[in-house]
Image (cartoon, rainbow, N blue to C red):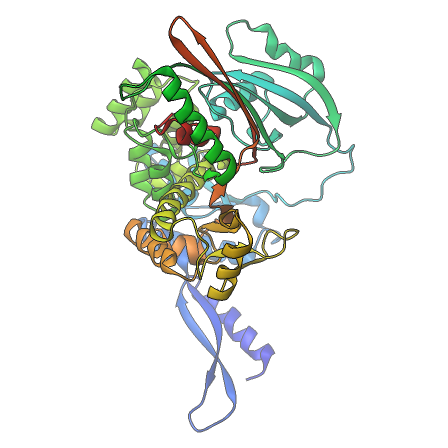
Amino acid sequence: MEFRDRVYLQVCIQTCFPGLDCKMHKISVAGDQQEVQQIQVVLDPVYKKFRDGGMTLENCERLLAFLRKGANDPTASKGLELEHEDTREARTALHRLIAKNSSSFKTKTEARNGIQQLVVYFMPKTNKKRKRSQPPVYLRFVLQKTNEEHFACFDKLSRQLRRPLSAFSYAGTKDKTAITFQHVVVTGVEPDRLLSVNSDPATCIRVGDLKYVESPMHLGGANGNRFSIVLRGLTSETECTTEMMRSSLETTLDNIKRQGFANYFGFQRVGLPTNTVRAHHIGETIIAGKWEEVLRLLLTVQGGDSGDVAKAKQLYLKSGDVDAALKLMPHGVSVERQLLQGLKRFGSDAFEQAVQSITFSRRVMYMHAYQSYLFNRMASYRLRQYGTKVVEGDLIQYDSQNDKAVKAITATEADELNCTREDALSLVLLPLPGTNVMFPSNATKEAYIKIMEQDGTKDALCESGPLKGAYRSLVAYPRDLAWSWEEQDNSLSLQLSFSLDSGSFATMCLREVLHSDI
């Protein structure tokens, strides 16, 4: 059959039977070296979703025919009237069903022929060429925050400056329990308006050092971080003198300076162990596509929740009453309100659409938390299994100018590195699982696979998911590490200053110094 005839046949099938979809396949004929084209007819996935959702056969066929004609059809601008009972409940059910299962349409309720009628239109094109205009203006500033969670801080800035979260760019997230400074770039904000943030004495946010720059920032774009930390009231769990404690800590600091420390992600990334639900738990369920579980975890009452937030969460989990929970939920609580508003818009069982209502940056943060959790577990496994020597199958970067130039080393290469370099372990990388990374070719790979299979995340992370993955050094080395002591009224204080590469956590360095969690 000629190509033109095949196309004509496909069009005829889909015109007569809108609920069917046609796919072309090449098949080999037994006893013949040639391949022939075959038309495979299957049920259209959009049609199946609509029918499974309760849409009538007539409405399904008319809607699919409308879709196949396309937005450029002369009659498309008039919309498509669907048949339904003349009740608000029937129209609402149709609105939600179409919004849930297709991004091609928008629906409106219009008065036609004296009755309220649901009308379907094509979504406006979002890929129109941008009109010629001035290039975006990027304003860089230093953000100081005190005891403020990173995303909560940017939610406040977004509301106060009336700019979307996507207008802000930065190189990384900062701890909550600290006074932190970082560069941030924002678009579409005048300097005077940005400085108005400082006029609120009650806020824990301050901005300054404004400067116009040529481009936004990107995650990981900073060279690193400089830390100045004072540890006060140091005590020992064993009976020892102050001098003995100082000597022990200085030995530890010398070892860290020479050998580094395990490059774990901090609790601010994976979630505090004291929390009922940690960030990596949420990320795991998002990656695994367990949407109802994601919603349940996000609406679980946490220790830091205010009274109104806790009441709203408990009300929804007990009764499933979205409207009542929304009335109780404070407006400043972004994630929980976005979830509930998603349920209100798409339906009480539209769990996936509700989760998609959360801002993209927050959803990615949860998924990164799970990747970080996997890295932490595998870093412990690798050090426990093989120690501080480089071994066969470890991953190293063989080209310092190319982050993707990674390979698994041979036994001979491992022996050579151990003999020639005292810091050979600094070359070892572990993957943050994704579709574009390789795994070590030793037992560490099997340990990765085992955990991902147990969590139900293997396929999404390694084959078809949205996360590409990355590599991270197994150990981190503090630069310019210096310390001094202060003793007053039998109380010992240690002042530390050091720099770390971008993405390494000072809390993990302190954990190694003190042999306890920070």
